[in-house]
Image (cartoon, rainbow, N blue to C red; front, side, top):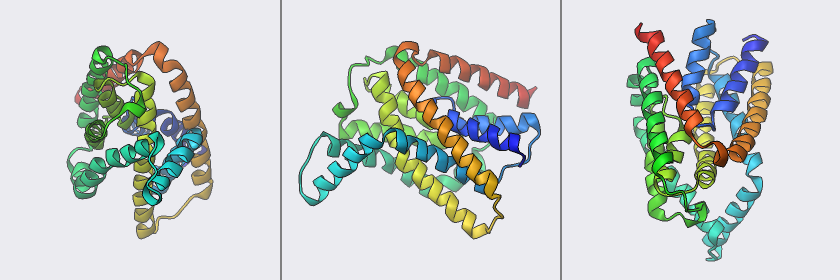
Amino acid sequence: MDFVQIIALGLLQGLTEFLPVSSSAHLILLPLLLGWEDQGLAFDVAVHVGTLVAVVSYFRKDLYCLITGWFASVFKGQYSTDSRLAWLIIIGTIPVGLVGLFFGDLVEIYLRSPLVIALATIAFALLLWWADAKGVREREQHQLTIKDAIIIGLYQVLALIPGTSRSGITMTGALFLGLTRDASARFSFLLSIPLIFLAGSLKTVELVQIAESVDWFAIITGVVISALSAFACISLFLKLLEKVGMLPFVIYRLVLGAFLLYLYLV
């Protein structure tokens, strides 16, 4: 990988991991358009680690409260809004974890195609628009129930379909349940932490098993670039979300999906 490719893919992963625009669509489209070779599993692991570092860093104070609250609930029987939210994040992660564990290979074999990505990019953009337009947007994340966490967790299962956008589909589910845009985004980002950690761990195991040669310059640069861009993206997104809503991202996804259909069908 040359330096330009490292920077571009690191930025792309960092900017699209948490926006409701589908990082998988972008990571497939950019190398295709520019004729780049596949970046390899090691680099994929690196940029995922970078986005994990970003979201953990941004929500470090929240995570401290969630973790200490969770341990207090487990070992001392002391329950709080933080311990409750921590349990809801765990519950919301279970559906995608189970489906990914048992059916992840089928997804890779049958759904990882440009046509599926294009159609998912368009279809779930329209669903996001509908949720944003029709949602009452009155509830905060601490008002979530176990039922809500399960429902959002089931929405997150759809993120296994390439082109869906994990952040986009979980925000869609949260908006349908009446959460504010800010609460939907924050719960989505917190929900991403165990999932990115688990996905990164699995990719690391795969990397060790295939003994792929590692370009450490590309790895370190990829981690730094994806972490910095993801941190900036989260911060800016949360500041602007209530003002701009989801419509700009919906329009962008529709254009992107139509462009992908043009590339592969025309």
